[in-house]
Length: 456
Image (tube, rainbow, N blue to C red; front, side, top):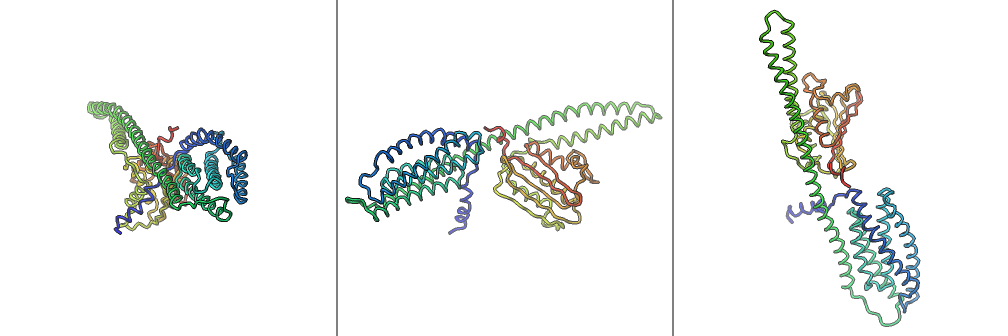
């Protein structure tokens, strides 16, 4: 087979995976499906089954073996009723319980219902039982109430296995202890077709979930893009307006000082010196504002959907290129899957490059740098960049994020200020941990979705 075919096969698992729903959305699904629909239906089904299992004989011509099976199913039915009462209590109070408890309960009750329906298959005709059609409903219900792919597919495969096992057990019982009267053999194509229908239903439900997940993610990304873009534009307009308002009076002051200096008579050195200081400070202020205008250009570059690992590797190649043998040992620890970030690529690149540059320059004689990335809470990415350099003194740890503060002879003092600025405009945060003589660790929290904070 061609290489392209195998590449498509390798990409298939990624294509079939779905993103995890927000816990509030999962809880809403369970509330609507399990509590508002399934519970009332179960109440009616339990009443009907109680009548048929205890008041009316299901099989008029049953053997002793079938009587034992029916008795077992009756006892299991009572157990299921008691467990379902417990499950109903959890669903009715789910708003006050941990979500994991609710998830576990829904999975357990769904599995219990599957096992009980398999028992009904045994006493209502095996492969030819009309209970089969309820199995299709169980698969659809699992797809709605249990959106997590591993649990949903596992449970739906168990549904098919239970149906097959119950049918085969019914065939074995009839052969071991056949009921009176003529018996018709089960046509193999019938139960194969029914089993195939269960598998097809499982696949279709999951395929629909994949399509809905793709659409949901596309809509979320569009909303996220619009929100982030508007945030950047608003911040950019504010920064430009502040800079513009400051530059005008500074220009006037500068002109006035220049004219005053020109008209001052020679010999009055103190006045001349004072005016010179004014002009120097105005020039310095003007340079700061000009730099800030460049520092605050937020809306020029487009927002992109960025993979964190790719951007980390790109920053590492820039700061520690392989063609230059820096005496630094680099370790990478990435924990997939990491959600993509909706940012300007230049902002994220500046964040990683500035921190890595600080780490490299802190260890001119060599050392170790560790770069780690892992998923964080609320759809965020946690990035840790650690070095074993000399560390940062406690008294200046907060100052290093201030613009123009630097301990380097030729430093601009903007590197770490840009890092904090570029992270905070997206709702993230940066923290520093350091111990003198043992190194420094930067802890970055990069939110993948700002919209998660306002969603219901």
